[in-house]
Length: 288
Ligand code: HEM
Ligand code: HEM
Image 1 (cartoon, protein in one colour):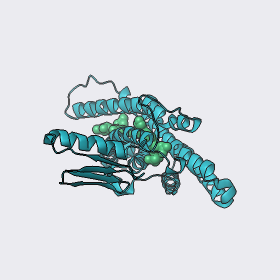
Image 2 (cartoon, helix red, strand yellow):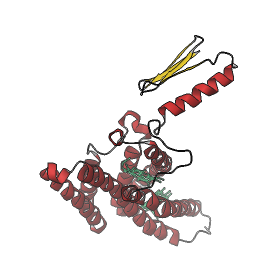
Image 3 (cartoon, helix red, strand yellow):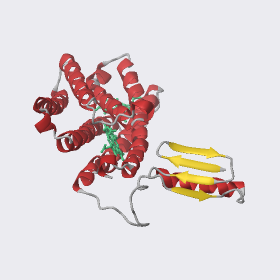
């Protein structure tokens, strides 16, 4: 059995000699044939991990940890706020949502409900905070990526000042549109600001420096995150309609969108943790 590995990948051949060719053209002849098949496969896996690991080309001692720089530390702000503030808020909002529903169904069937009427008000009060924090951490993540990758690493201000100014204006405009959505009273203004703030988030996310994982869009932290932020903005925009509508159509729409948003939040927890791990594994080839 022969394993041939280089920067293009790994190939396995069934001959008696086992050779590994790394990207540095080191050749190690090894004969694995005397070993039983499980051991051969174990060797194969270990060598594969060794040859494809991020520190393959670097001399890193076992147990050695690289120092985090300031840029990496700022990058932790977004996941830290998500874990410490956003997810507890999601828990509270969902708990109140279930109680509102229980109360409404019990009242509708003529029973007396033990759930106090205040749960509706609490759900909305915390829901408003939740929407603000979700949009906030989305803008924080996009802002961080654009500032570090475009402004700092690619010297955007010096290279293309117009583009730099457009990005700054777009960022301020998106924050302003979200704030105005909170203030808007009439249907027309709410529709205007929910469209403008969603557009702002989408346009900021369209920058080349944002890693969108288009090849796996259904499992992309970017697409799931932008969708959940827009769903929160929609919940805010339709808030008065949920109360006014006697046909319950807006309430049903809110439930459907929010259940979907909840699934997206679960996805964000999983894909965000994966991305933190992946970023740790990634090393910029230019720095080698
Ligand atoms: C993960 C997020 C959310 C979930 C899962 C969720 C789910 C629900 C559910 C299940 C109900 C009860 C519907 C019923 O009567 O059967 C409800 C009611 C409501 N939600 Fe949400 N919601 C979320 C976020 C929000 C946000 C961000 C807002 C806006 C700020 C909001 C505003 C409302 C309003 C106004 C009601 C009606 C309350 C009442 O009847 O007193 N929700 N929500
Ligand atoms: C409500 C939950 C969350 C939302 C709406 C959200 C949204 C976003 C968005 C829009 C981005 C920018 C696009 C991208 O690079 O993928 C991003 C980046 C990121 N998020 Fe989240 N996120 C959430 C939760 C989390 C959690 C829980 C973690 C980790 C535990 C996390 C870790 C990250 C990481 C590591 C990045 C990449 C930053 C970089 O490229 O330097 N996120 N997030």
